[in-house]
Image (tube, rainbow, N blue to C red):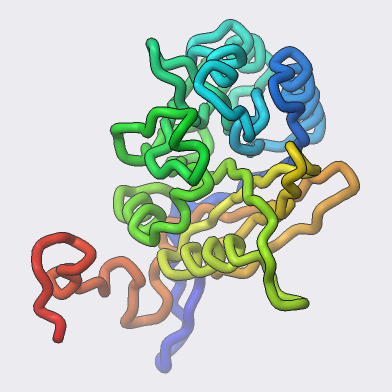
Length: 292
């Protein structure tokens, strides 16, 4: 981000700033059809590689579908994070490409709603969703570790899943821990909104991106599952908070996104992270509040 002060132009860009080609692709997983869903994901990966995409983000629970109903149904389609199929997908990737995909994970004896970060060298990181939404609580075991910042060839990716984004502390915390870009595999059930307005989840993502001056890539799913329609709210949001890219007929949103650690500087005297006063935010930090 570049700003101008009264005495001249000041460029706050990080010298290592760079742009990457990003795709968020909506899929319509078939509930319980593990083999079919894996083929669909592989096709998306192959197409992204062919098109020169560097970061591909796919939906939450893309391997299994969402409304699994019970731990037993989830277990039947769960995969461990070291499943051979992930190695097979990694072999398709060039050195500068990364895939983020939501999957139903078999984590020992527990079933998780997880997200996998995959590079050419294999699995770079796994995140187990901490904030479970509604019926998820009867199917999955919540994660026990905070959202990770994963080192990748493209930069440091902060990983969160769907409902996590509705807690402002999560994207802010990832930004404070050095994430360059946030990735959000999601399944957003369609909810009512005023005519002409964006989906509320997209509004929240836009606000989070602008508040911490960090790009956010949200990948929703498409279609209807078990009679429940999806928002199809896939959105790529640069650090200024305004969505870019348009969705094509295959549910793909493509955009070039700039990674710039200097983007937090929004003026000659202001920085959205450095200007924080955490000693006054006791209600958020849990350390007591001095705000009246």
